[in-house]
Length: 328
Ligand SMILES: Nc1nc2c(ncn2[C@@H]2O[C@H](COP(=O)(O)OP(=O)(O)OP(=O)(O)O)[C@@H](O)[C@H]2O)c(=O)[nH]1
Ligand SMILES: C[S@@+](CC[C@H](N)C(=O)[O-])C[C@H]1O[C@@H](n2cnc3c(N)ncnc32)[C@H](O)[C@@H]1O
Ligand code: SF4
Ligand code: SF4
Image 1: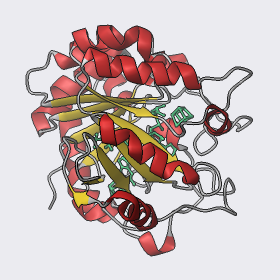
Image 2: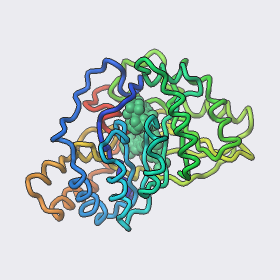
Image 3: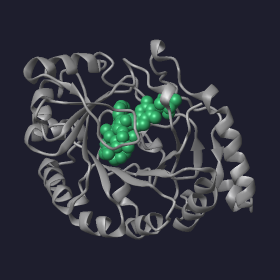
């Protein structure tokens, strides 16, 4: 059995973007009420007294948009101070990052993944929802600042939507030629919003790899990380290109992670909603750390059965939570 030592923590379910593939404008999402959010203290207790003792060493902060969480720098500092943690990272849309990057680095965060779907401001705004003003420039600046501050590896996440940004794959891959950036192409998962893009579907990573290989060649490579990307490099490039292929290939057999939602539900699989446990309610009802650890251990023994293994059938549209609510 794979060891499960990576926890993705959603700090907040709200977001300042409205990406069409995740939280489209007009989608009726019920936000978590403030009193239902795990407090900093509760989250730190769960990390320190439940997950670390069980063997979790890698933690990723996500959202919604994690930089919208009030006091996020202080929270990062507190999490980073646990000596058992070997890897603390964040996934962000980058909009607020330029102003916070140095503080986050000083707080102990060392690596960051930034969603960046397009080099073209118009396409970017179309994909992320611009609410009257373009966001591209500010995100582009954040990427430069994150690089200057020293986040390493610095990864850019691109969800590829056929007919929208797929024609940019070579331009995005070319960023890695001269910069030590790691661009990852993600197959769109129709989770929670199956109707969206239903006439366009997703592009198999194999096709993208072939197109990059035809232009420059492509060799197997590596970059530090805990996630499901298959990593390659254009010969001589400074950075790498990665492929996250949850639809065309299946990486569930090497699954090493669980997810904690902003309201304290522990979820064993991104694509299977069964067997989630409500750690926050147990904690608030007075369960001891030992009891909570036992609940999580039980879930770990069930996880191999829960892991999503139906790549042939794709995802189902019957999800009650969308990506923004789960944390991706
Ligand atoms: N199907 C599936 N997709 C995942 C899983 N983990 C991450 N992803 C997707 O991979 C994409 C990138 O995720 P990130 O948040 O950047 O994290 P990561 O790739 O695990 O991070 P690294 O540690 O840097 O490798 C997102 O679209 C996620 O939804 C997973 O367990 N299953
Ligand atoms: C849910 S977001 C949360 C963090 C942050 N707001 C961001 O966008 O980076 C985490 C990751 O999930 C990816 N994602 C969101 N919806 C997706 C979908 N339907 N299919 C594949 N990836 C998706 C995003 O591109 C992002 O890289
Ligand atoms: S992908 Fe991230 S930035 Fe886009 S809507 Fe979802 S949570 Fe927000
Ligand atoms: S779909 Fe589920 S089992 Fe597969 S890699 Fe993602 S979280 Fe793990």
